[in-house]
Amino acid sequence: MDKYNCYTPKEVHENMAKASVTKASYQWYQLLVLGIMAGLCIALGAEASNTAMHAITNVGVSRLVAGCVFPVGLIALVLAGGELFTGNALMLTGVVKKEIRLSAMLRNWVIVYFANMLGAVVIAFLVSQTGQWDFTDGMLGAMTIKVAVGKVSLEPWAALCSGIMCNIFVCLAVLMASAAKAVIGKIVSIFLPICAFVISGFEHCVANMYYIPAGMMAAENPAYVGKAQELYGITAEQLHKLDMAGFLYHNLLFVTIGNIIGGGVLIGLMYYAAFVHQSKKKTEK
Image 1: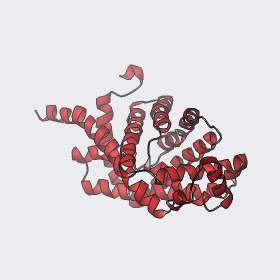
Image 2 (image 1 turned 45 degrees about the horizontal axis):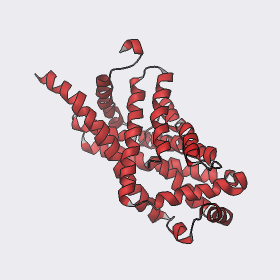
Image 3 (image 1 turned 180 degrees about the vertical axis):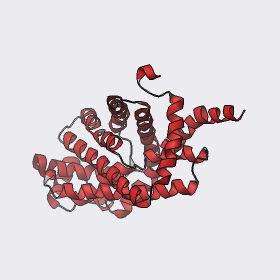
Image 4 (image 1 turned 30 degrees about the vertical axis):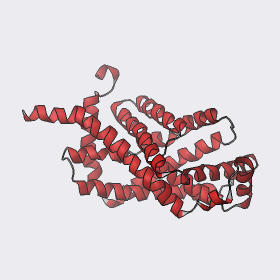
């Protein structure tokens, strides 16, 4: 497919399996730094999309606007470099292909996951100090609380399924970007699936590492809480759920499992079965 300046689907999935070897070989401090940078990038996209949509009352239009802004985070990550937990779900292919050990993949996942969280929380804290949440008479602060409350109020099954759907889109974006050889091709390939996932409102564990801590910080300000109660009918009971238990258990646990299933199994292993595994069998013959 050189005339289209991209790799074939079979080449893409073979390259992705090989890329897992590189990811597994990183030193812990490389994973830490690259994971922090990825968390920063995703949080920046989340922050900007919240700001863009916060005063739009039509749900469809507000999600469309957010969908057009949020992809900047993954675009920056792919082009500048970083290790993102949700994209690294595709390392399952490397394990099944026996390119890397299961322990090497889990080591990558654990370090990258918490590094992503650190980067996202740093951005949430910095944003909380800028006064940005005062925009539109505190409406942005109120919406920041509303978004976080909605996420910690999800039922486990809904959070799991939403996580699955999200990482189908995200890992498709990663694969599509790796298929493109030109920068513009990578940008377009990332933009379209990520825009679709944001419009759909699905759950991304790393993005939630920004959204929920940001909501918890905004909820420390009585003015934002009052505005959230006035505009969105947020109750004291709902605000009570906005704590570490709500963050880690009611959202991140189930969303993370869903992200692994969506990206690692439904994208990575399904395409492995279609392309990489069949290629391996022909080589053995």
